[in-house]
Image (cartoon, rainbow, N blue to C red; front, side, top):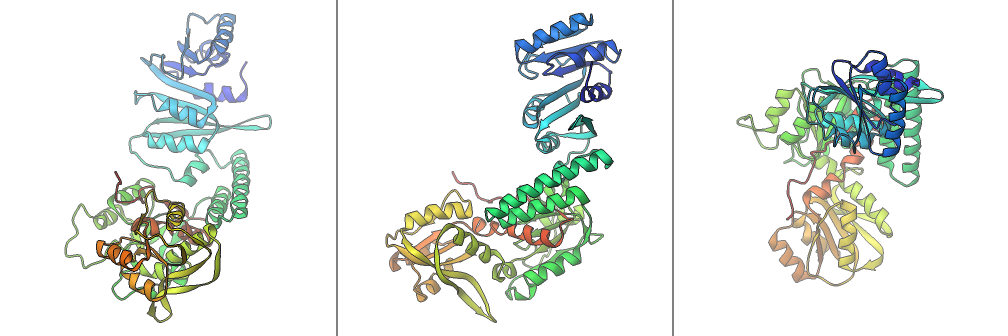
Length: 478
């Protein structure tokens, strides 16, 4: 009566109480659970009358209509959950299953799910809702493979990384290896499509995910990561007042999971801990001035308490060719047609400089440039000076570069793009008829994280690297 998929689901039902089959269709599973003696009562629901009529025919055929209750319901909306031990949701998209699960209020109910699509989304959502996957199985039926997930309320709440959600929890047997190989091939196609569209960082990320799908995740010495970063963004380039480097060690000085963030805040450390990361790499130093005390509300305390190391790359990342300002240059080149070679903006000696000066092939009005900068920096707001003349020659510097307005004027620039601009600088810009654009300290620097991930994944594809969800603008705009 049942195909391989439904047989496995029936096998996984605990039988400790009432089972609910959401989206029952023909009620074959419900009938099997009763006739086999696995359950004494089953509730079978569906959102449409047609499938329920088919279900009614099935339960009558097997003579179990007194033990199978049929309910017309959108998900679990009208399904009573008293004495329910198992909820089965099979044959739907992962997003739909996650939505149904989000409405369950009873923490003691066991979930058995078979998503047809977006399996990785469902896994991640389950952990966000406080569940953990206790079993996961692959079932072959003809040329198709189905993932069946069993989840229960978690004792310890944690988060899945993007890779963990893709990789899953089923065995590395012949069927599992075949499934993951197919997933790796799918991810390679995504990588190739991104590469073709010019998204180099995204292409490398999906190539690294594909690598891990076939080879798994592995540990790397933190000192090896530091050395690799040092070749790309030499720590020796940092300004004299800066404090970039390996600022916090962990016990083993190894890691398999890395979280990237602009700032190391308590929320970022908490996220890294929940994801099992052993290293955070940030732009802003978590230790900048001498620490006279380490209080329990500090990020440094949280790093030490959770055994998480920290590498911080500040001015060395800003100055290096492929660093923060290099990424801005790349994105502006994508957005606008430039002419000539970029020139160094603020030169600080030793061949080092902050930012670049570019020349647009065609002049642009300030308002149009401001709108374009929103998409370049993924920011909702751009502050701009009250200047109306067209712009051709543009200086830019990430972070807080308002003090460089005089340099921009000296080098005959029509505009300066930066962040954190103070009131007196706005007055000076208006007096000088220069277009000044403040795209925010956060947005002009957070842009580097995807490139930083690309650089690390290119060298260490076995690492599970996440850009922190908590790497967010510390300001709200109302």
